[in-house]
Amino acid sequence: MVTGKYAIETIGLVKRYPTTGRRTGGGGRGAFGTGRGIASFGGIFSTLKRAKGPFIEALRGIDLQIRPGEIFGLLGPNGAGKTTFIKILCTLVIHDEGEAYVNGHDVKKEPGEVIKNLQAVLPESRGFNWRLTGRQNLKFYSLLYGVKEKEAEERIDYLLDFTGLKERADDGYQRYSTGMQRKLLICRALLRNTPTLLFDEPTVGLDPTSSAEFRSLLCDKLAREEGKTILISTHNLHEAQDICDRIAILNRGKIIACDTPANIQHMLLEEKVFNITFVNTTGRAPAGVVLTGLEKLPGVNSITPGYDSEGGFNQVSIRVNKDADLSGILELIVKNGLRIGGITTKEPTLEEVFIAMTGRDAGESGRPRAPGGR
Image 1 (spheres, one colour):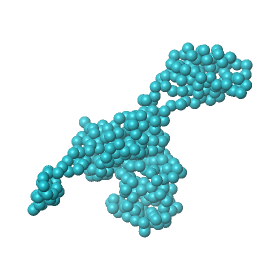
Image 2 (cartoon, rainbow, N blue to C red):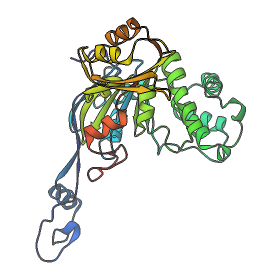
Image 3 (cartoon, helix red, strand yellow):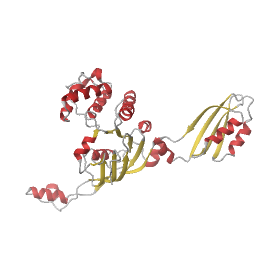
Image 4 (cartoon, one colour):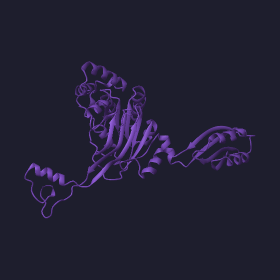
């Protein structure tokens, strides 16, 4: 039973796209490859019905729950089904099996209620008039959305200030940089003040500075200050790792992992390495005593000492099991009079884990691309 506990919830979600039509007839090919003419509209419809061929399953049984106020990342290579998933939530694409809900509203049975609770920012959805200013564009869309005039003016002023566009609000849209255009997209998405926002590749084409500003806007202002639920479909693994509370990895239409970025990194981790440096080692315990003690600790697999130019023991690299307790290591080191200057830990990056799980990098396509099915 769906109670509206989640901002977004899907249960066994399936979407199929037909591929090539099946040839149905021999000899000469008439309309639709049937070998004969079509004399009526009824004949066209029956021909189309017969011509259905095999399918690509863009989504294969997606179960997902996203909590209110969460920043959730949807990762996957091209063709994984990310854009199809977002378009189903936006009611732009109808799923074939399963259920999908936005704040408890069924996307198939209650599309009007879903649209009241959700706004999407898709890469192909700019649609701004280049001859209008930023402010005029927002006024136009507020009319389309049915926002009352006074409320629209107040909302537009707030959003332009919120996104840092206030000083350029009356400049023509054609004079906006790519980053400013993306911010205007956010303004448009927030005109109706919906609680849930969907972003498909939000920082594609932005320079590093604009990307950082955009991530800060999403994370600090929209999620933390305004309490929005944000779903981001992205290829940018570093971006997802930096700002997402949880991520799901989608591969060939199925979710193969769903957790916090740190926990997903930990899934494939068998060992980790602690690099510990020491300061003022003169007159301290000899290296042999410390190394022997470390070797006896549970979970320690190997030790590599390091020495300075004068032969002083100044660092150690310790390879341990992934669940090993660092406190025992630190206690032994301090007990032997060594002062710790720094500790670093080497673990696999999210990108390395992603490639290990999918066998592909984030931008690589693994199958024919379904319509809208990234």
